[in-house]
Length: 457
Image (cartoon, rainbow, N blue to C red; front, side, top):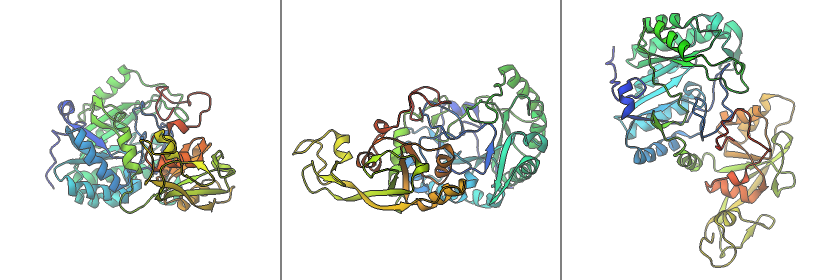
């Protein structure tokens, strides 16, 4: 058996290390293959700290660049990990490529990932070969009748499973993944979400089973009720209930008690997370060309071609915008129907030779229009749209339903609800500027948000 990696510098596996050793989560995995009854990934607020939340999604090349820049600002980082916002193994190609790039640049860094385990077994050798030292598996039950109450559906390839068959498949893959990781010398922590009335009397059996298979640490996490989920009305377990569950499970496996429910873009020390502070850096890296020109364009839903003012579900055609040749004059030049350039407005400049003039800068250019897939075919319409927009980093629309938003995000496309002159908003997005000024307002804070003023509000 391979040598067990050192855990003394991993802040999750060793509590003492959490005081001086940091971690960074690289959000390169937007797709998920399981819908848990307690998970809702549609909110993106910098003030929320829970799994599934991130301020941006990165390609592997962008993630490598982001890590380099994070290390310049936070030298305490010892661990790089992938924890979503979906599941790393539902995004296996991106996950493995990220591992490869990071290992080339930072061979001494610990690398870990957090997964539900469903898609892991086929990639166990690749994970070990690419230097994964630690892994976390979320295993909420070892009885399919119990876990069937925690999962809405499980997707294995193109097949969607529900109920007990879904739970049986999940458990089989999870235990196979756990055994395979341990055999390859990867240290394993098991996360278990404590859900009152469902698995709160079952946690000790989980602890006993996973310990027998070689897991070295267990993290019992109290349910965090989240809006718009099947378990939203279940009360969070009391500290006493969590303590009792840890006492019983602790007879079989060491317990983690310092978890911070980290975001998918967490960065810094566990007790001093800097994800809010470094969110602009993450967004900047997400907007940059990753070297392959993978997503240079922006799609726009517009009724008449001048304003972002159409619901995505109503759009039969989308404008596709990119950056055109450099501006030749001294500001005041207009493109596309006479609308003033968003880059001029964003910098507060007007015509004439003034500081901040956009002379010589690339400008937003309307490249083409694309017909959207026909309505009436359910989620397949949005998967088809995502495929059609695979060269676009974002879709700008007046409004969008949650289903298309989630599906497009799974494909790495951000949906931004906004209002304003098309060229202005597109210019801000393509320049990597803050687009909060263009956010569509709906008369209040979205349900489920922390009301803290973040981008998801």
